[in-house]
Length: 144
Image 1 (cartoon, rainbow, N blue to C red):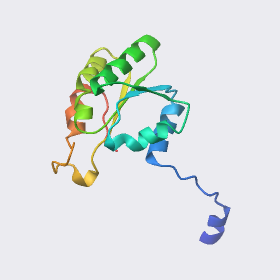
Image 2 (image 1 turned 180 degrees about the horizontal axis):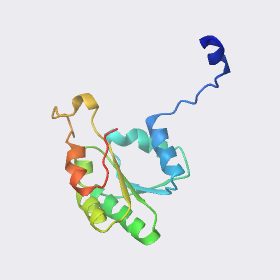
Image 3 (image 1 turned 135 degrees about the vertical axis):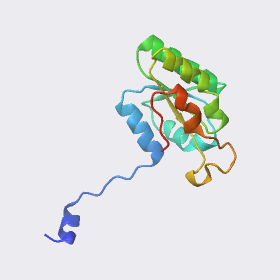
Image 4 (image 1 turned 180 degrees about the vertical axis):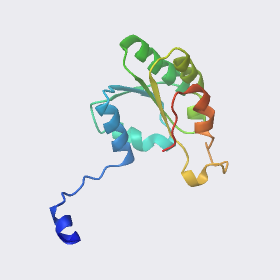
């Protein structure tokens, strides 16, 4: 079998955006609600949220409120609370609810925006060391 024959047997793969992948992963893990406040770096995710009906977005007036609302949701339902905030001040405003959830063993996932990887450390608009700042108040922490 040649490489050409092998390619002919492959099914075309469905391409997905990062936002679609995020929402698919949340849905596949039983998430029904996201608490958040929109900002520039997460607008593609917000666009995708409003293209589907499986996950409801709860708009708050401040990122810290999103964190506390998601934490309250997790406490009252036993399900994971999910927060969606923008980069920089959006994520730093979630520190208190992240720490509170960590100390009380409440399941909380915080998705935040970030500047492009090439701009990290350059003092770009709303750029901060998100991973470093949140490391002490989270069980796990990744830059994607």
